[in-house]
Image (cartoon, rainbow over all chains, first blue to last red; front, side):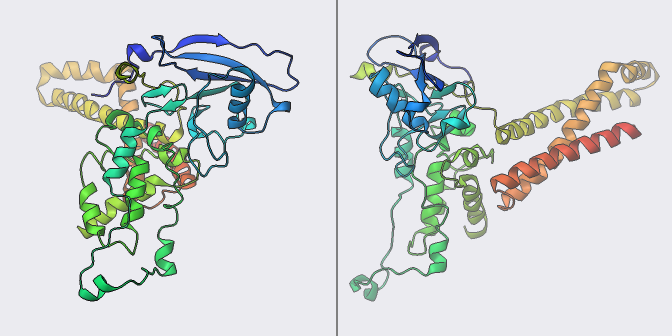
Length: 263
Length: 126
């Protein structure tokens, strides 16, 4: 049975308010989730103020400004700062997205920042993704190609793909595995132990759709499971939250359809 | 080290995630489904009272006249139409049709509109 409330050690408390050293010309308030593994306290919400005149436009710019100038203990993942690495995924203003792609001007009032929902927290805004990565490995996200005849076994030719087959991977390969979609999915919140979640199923669809892969049927069989796949009830939160504008829900529908028509 | 990973808190979810329309439509599909099952039971009891002889007909009349019961029936009609139209939407999705985000939002509003119109029509004639 799903637990809809937070366990006792996860309940939020009020944290510190960091007053700005000098008055800001264009102030922006940020309320950020903090949790330190080295003390025994509950998570808290710390409040910060930055001056947008002296800061880049994105939420990630604000986080880095806070870390550099106000509070060096603030912990978050970041790398590319342009939406291709998927590191800075977090819940901003109630919706999961990449901090580097979310403009501060999109949020009218105070910017509330939490880690990706319903995940174990390593520290502050850093969630533990190891379960999600295990699930990704379980769908074998690599090209599998059985060599059936002698000619194929000895061949060293590259595996060519027609443009129209390559097009079938569009909308799938662009995924940066930030897990914004997976952690926005209520089904994954309640059944994350078994249900693979939209990000991993999108990857499953990516390898199922690859014309060079010979294991399409085996892949479909492997995910044809009431928990792994069919906990998806087309809630569509995944598509709503994807910062890359992909549509995992639609790809999952495609997988379900392929299972019905091909297996 | 073991202790550090054992007491990791669970990040907040329901309480902090925005009530996005996609999820709201979905949860109301479930709620209306559960409501309809309970409502169907109540309505069958209501019908059962008519067929149970004259001494029960009195109860049938009292029940039928009560405003509370009429309210339940009204909510039940909203539930049945919402579940019907949203169910059709989900059927299309099973074929992968209408799953672009813009279409999802549009069809959601269409469901609400049809539910409202159909309920009003039923209430007008009932």
